Amino acid sequence: MSNQELPVVITAIADAQFESFVSGTLFAQGWSVIFRAIDTEALERFCANNVEAAASSLLIYAPDLSGITPEVISNLSAKVKQIVGFSNDSDLEFSDVHAIPTTATDLVSVVRGFVRAPMLRQRTQISRQSRKAHVMAIGSAGSDTGCTTIALNLAMELSVLDKSTLLIDANFRAPSIAALIAIRNVQSENGWRTIAPNLAIAEITQEEAGSVDQFMENATEVFDNIVIDLGSISGLSNRLTDRRWTSTMTTWSCDQGDELMVIARPDLLGIHRLEQVCALLEKTSIRSQLSFSLNMRSQGKKGQDEEARFLAIATRLRPLCVRVIGRDVRAATAALEQKATLIEVNTRSALRKSIATIASQIKR
Image 1 (spheres, rainbow, N blue to C red):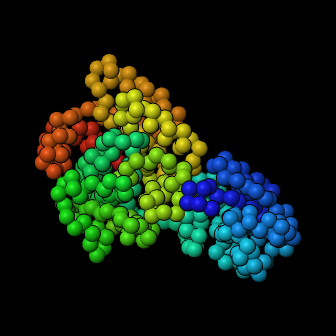
Image 2: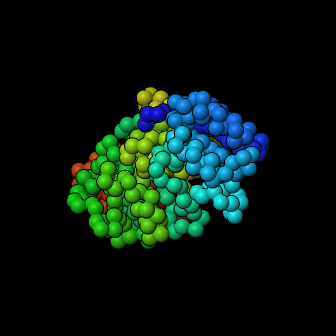
Image 3: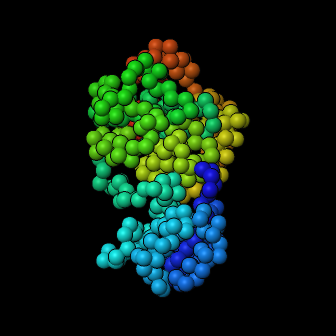
């Protein structure tokens, strides 16, 4: 199975309702369920007679299957690509089983974790309810949407509200936050560098990608807010099952973030890219709540038309909220030239005020 292929699944679950939930949910995500075993004998026979298919498959089982034992699972581990078990019975001898998911999103999140990292066992994921930080990831529907500018200035606005904030540059294609504000040596022993009162930055490189889970677990306990610049999120569904380091933060953000803000620009190509991203999101289960922002909206009647087209697309997904940010070339250019944030350049600019409003709406 290549990095870009979706999982091939075998189910081995006796409970018809739960098996139907698993198969139906994964099928809706575009994944192939090639065999649904009704007992251990049928499962072993399928694997023996379909060696190549089994070897590229993820086996999803429950201990309620007739004849299933830890020994059977151990033997099957050599015949299939990966195995994940589900049960709510904590007294069973089976190791590494997960609690039965109650929602499709939870199921998909666990399965994606096994597809991405077959040699790792998924432990209990970070509890979003108990952790300290509110995590907002910002992704771009296309190019040149102002995603990085919004992420940088949103983090600054949160920090001036006396909220300890971490800004993470996870745009592997074109990391630019450090350059935009003339910061060198972003990395430090704890993974981030403090650059202003209540504000720190970090950059995810290939070296750090392998320890993202631990890094984020630490960060969510230290900061009040975490803002992640993902860059482009085109091809999102493939990236969520991609094992390459370049997809690590996108996957973490979708599975563990509180909000994924998708930024679009109002021109013809920008709206086309937004339509493409929304089409993918309609078919993809993620835990993070969705929001949409139209950046660089024009003035007057033209701006009204741009906003109407944007809302017609974005509201189909019933997002947490939709936001509109007006075009402010002067303020953006001044910040770029001075290698500073908007609040440092012109506190009264329309762009700065729009981003400050977003910061004030984030509850944490």
